[in-house]
Image (cartoon, rainbow, N blue to C red):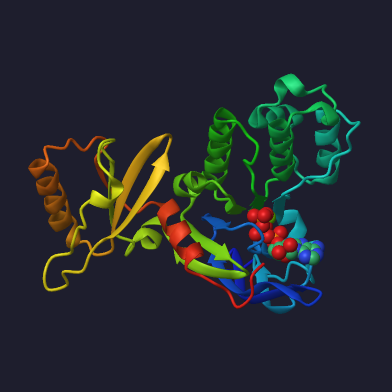
Length: 321
Ligand SMILES: Nc1ncnc2c1ncn2[C@@H]1O[C@H](COP(=O)(O)OP(=O)(O)OP(=O)(O)O)[C@@H](O)[C@H]1O
Ligand SMILES: [Mg+2]
């Protein structure tokens, strides 16, 4: 199939009755790329994925997977696609091995059962009935089923939700290996670290729209630096210094005080890179003059979490949901 884009979405709109869940989403994923869709609950991620998976036709806009319409040309597209739904549906009375075999029977060029059990870390659960699996083990079985065939494109809707940190790390490695083999992956996640670790590019969705998209570097750019420290216990919060940006701006730096694990933490948010040294100098002089020790002092770039909260917090849609 000839196409330069494995996945292409242009101006997608989706509605449930008179509620518009997806409001003009556009994105592209190139072959062999991993794209992460982040966003608030109810942002429209699953709806977007289900459209790409061919479960529903677009209300407006176009979607293409491997150059074809995944709903209209479902029969042609489906064999090249692996799908992990947000909530998988299993036959609870089948064992793990039987479940995998049912899927293998339906899939051309299926991987071996043993390989899938090993990949998903379910060797010990081979004979366990699906109803007896833990939440994280069910998720791993979902992943095994998504990769039964040698899919060119994988849609993974919250692949690691409910997994313990070790299983999550193992799953990341499986996904990395698939991408290294040339598989295109579009996944959703609420774990920002997952996106940071895996994604070539990502987008943050809120209320049916993509608010920001790009590489991690592009998304973080322009969100400045942070200075943080634990507020000394004897110091009233009102006496914290007001830091300023250098002339000619001279404006004061946005500050926040939060209680974190029983400690009061002050964070100054610098939007201009040039301001960091100036503000840090002011802070250190202020502390020296008062003979205060600023424990936990740190200077860092904006994190994906900072950007997420900023983007989501500053978007008040025309309607609230
Ligand atoms: N079948 C449906 N009928 C009516 N409304 C729906 C249906 N499915 C989803 N919605 C609504 O559409 C919006 C988008 O839902 P969607 O599942 O796409 O969000 P999401 O971004 O995947 O959220 P989450 O992170 O919680 O999984 C939500 O407000 C949801 O309530
Ligand atoms: Mg969802």
